[in-house]
Length: 184
Image (cartoon, rainbow, N blue to C red; front, side, top):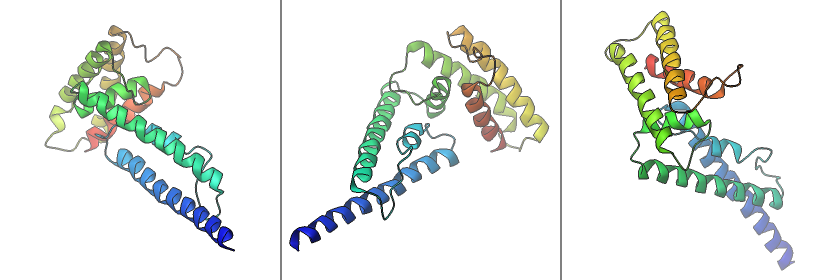
């Protein structure tokens, strides 16, 4: 009987820990979505693909989830260290990540220069709206000017954000980001 109880305790402990860590993971993703100065949290979103811990999850699934979450936390920590090492402004780091379409752990000098130039463009375009709210029309105009300038700056630094000639994930990220910045 003792081994059966021990097995049950281990299984319930693993499920409880995995479910608690899933809450922490969701908090990280929510924080990044609600605060556009936060670095991208794609590593936290991707680590749980197909595995969502719940009361009846198998111990094996909980272990897989915990390993994936641990890798995501390590990736997030490496990203944070890379941003800190390069002394990057939070907006510059976010812009660099959006250009790459994923949080980086290594930033080339060209990417940093590109992101800094794009950040300068964003600061210049938002200056008129620091003390007042932008209208919908102004928001569209700023977003359009920002994306046009970003495409030019990026090409100059060797990043073609329009190379697929269709939907561009980096431009989608950048568009949503600038719209949120203008609306604030």
